[in-house]
Length: 290
Figure (tube, rainbow, N blue to C red):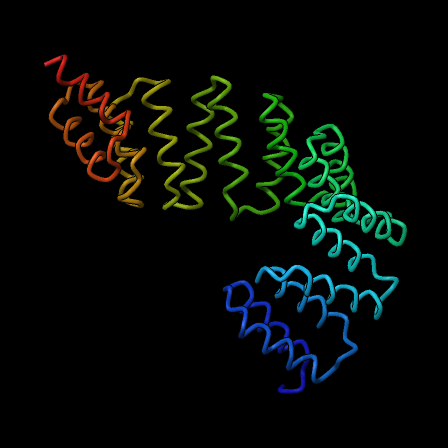
């Protein structure tokens, strides 16, 4: 279908995601040559310019889209998001007000309002905006996740429900579960933290952070040093240059009395990261103990 605008735009979106901006732009221009009055062409063109760092051109494309579809609230929402990337909060909120006049139930408009308020340091307004987004779209993954993050920082149990709901909306995305695991870990509930990290590993077996945090909880909270070393080893299998995992495995070995293995890991950290304070301190402890 060489004359299908959508076919060219779909490939342009693919190229844009892969950061192949020249190829994406060529496809958008091809779509433009087929139909220069198609709003979607200018929206995709705006994305290509935005992700390639050309914010002014991105804005020009959105202005053209607005000329073609003045009643489309989503164009205003996209414009607000662009202004937000430029840290132009006044224009961000102006665009959001326009969007909500046209579509008072636009969840994405409330979500972007939340992001803007959060960037400006007004967490209470951010929470209100995110909750408005969720009220209009109970499956708004990003709003649920942001609420989970804010409440986890506050050590508020509301974080649990928001993060669980976000995970249910997008089960393949392990980020909400990781934040939930950290919430339990930082609020002295190591067993629940370990349970959540196991969930993550079931979803994504090569998630090095889940293996690392498992090791950390086993070492610091449970004092199960052998199991902790095994978890750190799994993280290192995924990323051999993960110096934090290497140091902590060495520390687990040190705590279980395996001085030879501990020394080996500390020395390897120093080969990878010269003058690493923790590794130097670890070797000093071994020397003083020996």
